[in-house]
Length: 102
Image 1: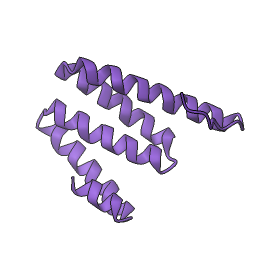
Image 2 (image 1 turned 135 degrees about the horizontal axis):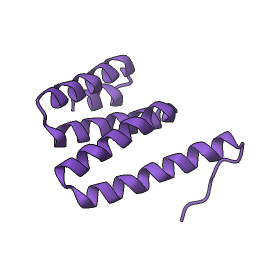
Image 3 (image 1 turned 90 degrees about the vertical axis):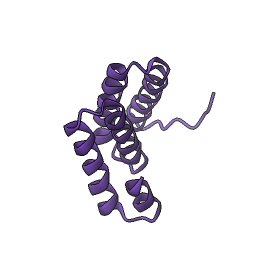
Image 4 (image 1 turned 90 degrees about the horizontal axis):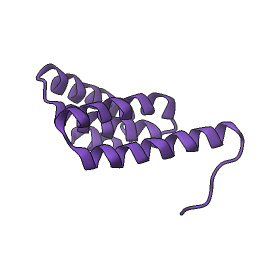
């Protein structure tokens, strides 16, 4: 949560350090659900800051941890989000940003 607060207050270096600390701590203690949430939040942070190339792997690792935890609905939801991020990146790379919403 501290990382999110730093992000909201535009303290990006501090936010990134805190996201990574949360991920490391949860991983070291084998708290799959907390690691999943920290990776998801960090991945979203990266995507929102135009760093999708770094964010997608974080989201995919979050997905793996949600699977370990057995959070089936969360897995489905995050899969959809990751697909949208991939499409957005591909569209941007092709020079055709997507502006429509379904």
